Image (tube, rainbow, N blue to C red; front, top):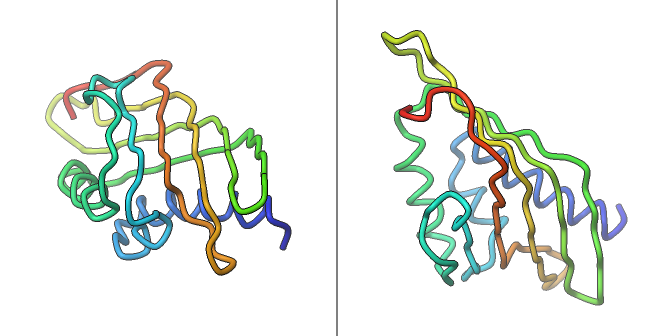
Length: 140
């Protein structure tokens, strides 16, 4: 596998394991500390937080949903030694049947990741989501 393929695989695994709610595997994709930026969604300023804090907040925030589905692509990867930047498009779909019949919320945007390689393993140490729009039931 090439370095670019390894880097893309790490990002894909982050989303696949999130959809599966496999939080231990999600943590393996992340560095011990991550510059985490969801400010485009009104989540406050970027901050350096632990991988454990990320998985705990995702577990809590996604717990009530019946299904989660992330789809990412249009990757642009730049590698420099043991560091890499990855840009991609992303769509996240959240599904929760409810009495309104409006069961889906969709987030559309882009991601900027930074990864570092240690002992042939790539880990995400920067996670930035850039929201373009939200559609569907925003109250899910």
